[in-house]
Length: 124
View 1 (tube, helix red, strand yellow):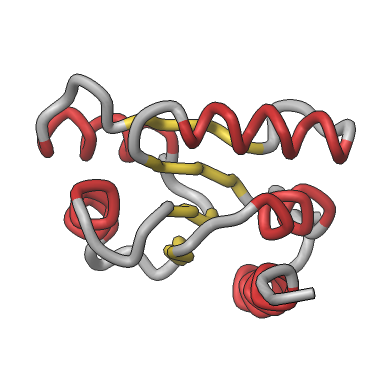
View 2 (view 1 turned 180 degrees about the horizontal axis):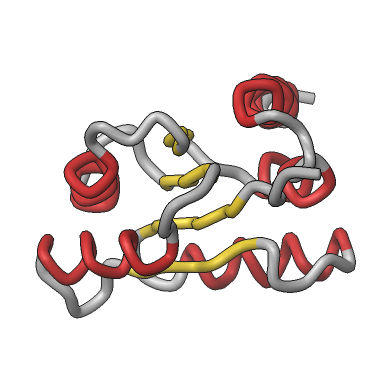
């Protein structure tokens, strides 16, 4: 059996920690996601935090916005890696889906996570 996917959530302020805590509360799964904040760090330190959280092996990096410092730092750090995917616009539904799909192949997991996250956004 291959190693489970690693999950890292990179957001502005305290959003990553809050999303990870909420996903753990909803799912009951602890330790599957690592939160990273951009608070108090320049692009170099943010890149270093991403690198430490996603060493070799398959993983998914969840980012809050499709532009900005979090995405730019992630893109610089992960350039050339084919074992990591970056998903922007992270929401709670995506993270809960991730913790239960960590054993899937990377691209299969990404498709399911994006589908789940997209269906979670709407008007009722």
